[in-house]
Structure formats: C-alpha cells, structure tokens
Image (cartoon, rainbow, N blue to C red; front, side, top):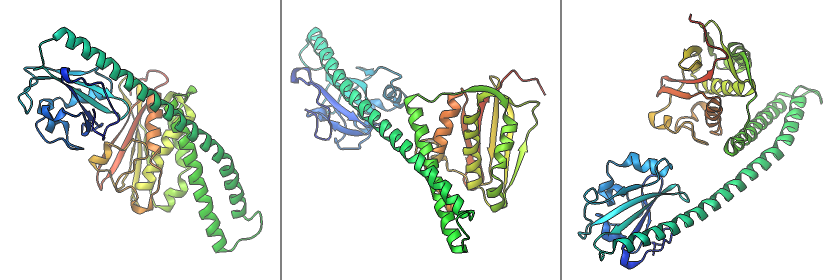
Length: 380
C-alpha cells in the first residue's frame, strides 16, 4: 500500500510487481508504495527530487512538465532506456498526471516477474483503469470545492461592494465639509478612512474579476475607438499622484492612427493598472514614458516605461501570478493585493493580445501589451 504521506491507494498486486511514487508539481516525492524502494537509487524521503531517485528521468524535465499540464497523455520508458534498479531489477516506468495534487504519479513495473505478458498486460490495464477512476473522483471533488470557493468569493464581493460604496460616499461628503467644518486632525483621520475604503472597494472589484475570469463568464463589448485618446484621458486622472511624486509623464506617439478593436472599459482597466504601477514604483522626480508601435499580426503594442525600483529575474517569472508581490514591492510604502497584473494579463489575452515585462533591478521596468488594430494600418 502507499506510504501514509499519500492519499492514493492504487491496486498493487505482488505478482505483478507494480509500485508507485507520487510527486508534487515540482517533481519532488510526496508518497510511495510499500516496495518502491527496490526500484530507486537513493533513500526514499519526502521532497526528494525524482531525478535523484530515478536518474533515468534526468533530461526528461520538459516531457514531465508536459505530462503534468496534460499536454502529453503519459511518459513511458522501458529497457534499454530504463536501466536496472538498485537491486538489479529490470523495470518499465510510466508517468501519468495526478490532478488532485497537480503533480505526477510514477508506476514502476518489475519485468523480472514470471513471464506472463498477456496476463500482466491485462492486469496492468485494469489497475490503470481503476487508478484513472480514482483520479477522476478526486478531480471531481476538487472541481466541486473550486466551485464552492468561486461562489463564496462572488457572494462576498457583491455583498461588500454596496456598503463600501455608500461608506466611501458619505466619508467624502463629510471631508468636503457638507456636515460641518473639520479641524486638521479630523480631516486627516477621515481622509485615511476614505483611502482605505477605496482600497477595499478595489479589492472587491478585483476579486469579482478573478471569479469571472476563472469561471469563463467574463464578456467583452468590442468596438473601434481611439486608444491614444483613451490613454490621454486616463493619464489626466493621475495628475495628483504625479504631482505628489514630482513625476513627469510623456507620450512617445508617432503612429498615424491608434484605433483599436477592444472593450473600452477593459482597455481602460488594463492601462489604469499598468500606469498606476508605474506611478507607485517610480522614483520621485523621475520620468514615465507611454509609447506605441506597430506589432506583428496587425496589433498595436503599448509600452509603459518607468524609472522605478525594477524587478529581479526570479520575480519576473512569477509576476503575473495571482496574489504575488515582488520581494521589493513594499519599498517606498507601496501597497497592493497582487491581483492587478494577473487580471491585466487575463484581459489582454482575452482580446487576443500578449503582455510582457522587461526589467533590471534598480533601473526601472517596461511593461508592454498588444491589442488588435481596428483596421490594417497604413505605413508611416
């Protein structure tokens, strides 16, 4: 049976000599069956890389990732590609995806057992079928839990949105003096409350967007409009924070036209997220550049260059993941929920575009994304 570290319990029969290793998404050991040790070349222990246990898999990292993502049905190795195990056993190796953990399951078959190929093959197929059914049950349970989570996030976000909007409105009225004059300390306290209410309102909006993206229910109202004109309007909304940080924002606009075919509200959300990040993370007295150029496949590429703190190479790989914030993201008092860039990427890709980042730590970052032109562009 499988080691207690694993929830899996496949039907392993002694005569067939099939043993099992369970791996996480990083191909590290999370569980194993009772006699699996006879196949491996190292001591079985949690978090051990599978390439240490089964050196035959060294060099197959790309194939393992494809199996894990469901891009390959399985990875199968047999002698002579699959060498003898520690005890001199000839064995074959089958690697399958394991959805309950997002990892992999390795099936190791002892080929030194009595020579009953037809019976062994039939039994292996039956065992694999049972294993697949177990995986299907686990997957169905995970999908049910995912739906419960989505429903909870959606309900909570909707329930919070209305009272937060009302609270923000009344706070702003009091700050403006509608309910009577305020002294400096009262004004400062209420302004802090209003700002934090605004942050909560943005968070609920982001959570609602994430839920729509995950459920596939997000829809786009595509239309043709002047993207450069939209960018100018959005930049106008940032005049106060630009002045507060003594930042200069300029356009590098040299194309003949900027009409795109997109959802104007979502395009505004994409630009706002990226410009907001540029403002937050730029050094005071710095310069932000918004540029445009033609990209392949009749796309308009927009880039936002800042003079900020930069992003390490390690963080760039995870930058568009949900709730991720870089190691230096809190420098200068910048705050966020780690959802903006994830939502931005999803919205850009929903339009058929791509989003990317180039950055050097301590020297600033350039975010870019593409949206489809409304019509084929004329050459400059």
